Length: 363
Image 1 (tube, one colour):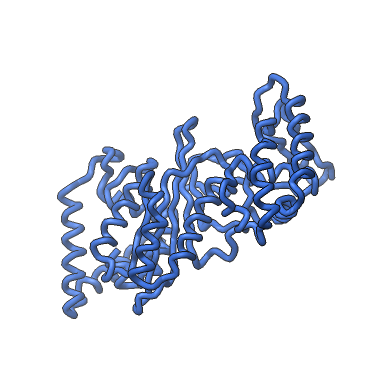
Image 2: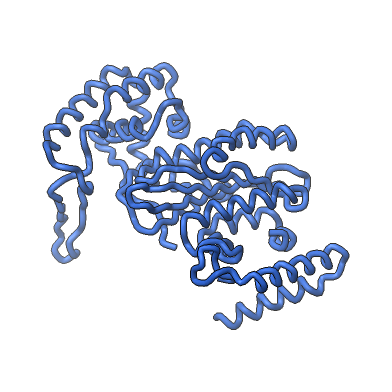
């Protein structure tokens, strides 16, 4: 980290952390697990400890973490604001919004349990950018997926905002922040600002219809639409035996609670709707499905996930950490930094030449 900041600045470290391939390689260089869910938590934990010790040198602050540590993120961001003058209220809003999106607006079967917020500062100790690394777990499949965010890449929090989403396999998802779901988001806002009685009548009709259609069958995958070859010029709708909507997906009780609140204080945009207190994944899903049926504004089912050893791994795979080589690597880097601070850049120049040589040898 010190080398990267010295060479390229703290913002470059945010860009690296938001790259899932680089993040994975970084974990391997640190000697952490090969590609388990533990890579995320251990790398972010190491980052937080390193930045705590060298915050003034690196220009980076790391907040949050795994489990209970993730829930302390707002308090830690407020402490950063008091110490630096940063707009803590806005940082807390971003932190909460990002978590709400990956836990509620993107319903892919993974429940968040890890949230790390990394903040970079410029030479004048002013906030220059942020990155977020989150991880969710699917307890049934015993698989994790990681969500990467980068401030400079977020043009909109509700239109494909992720820098990357990494998973072992695709999932059946309700993606309320997909770019193609704009009409559904607009319909949800329209519903949220209407008299609650009308919304609840429609929701109850939908729930009864789904309950009758469901019967004793268990829900499986949602409807899948595929297109036959262009020569046939025919749209082909594949209808599985079961579908993915159940009566539980439309819960009038949940809708009533949120509808009363949003009617009294209508959200101005979809971000405000996501940040509404008490609006969880179930209520959000109900609202999305009702909006889809009333306004013919389909919600996206696109899964945004992408498919993604210097010293071995602590889990022994592909081999155990080679401690002697690990310590030698650290010693070389520390010596290079020490020399650079006193004006001797020989070691840093050597690392640059080595990097250029590796680039040529691998092309």
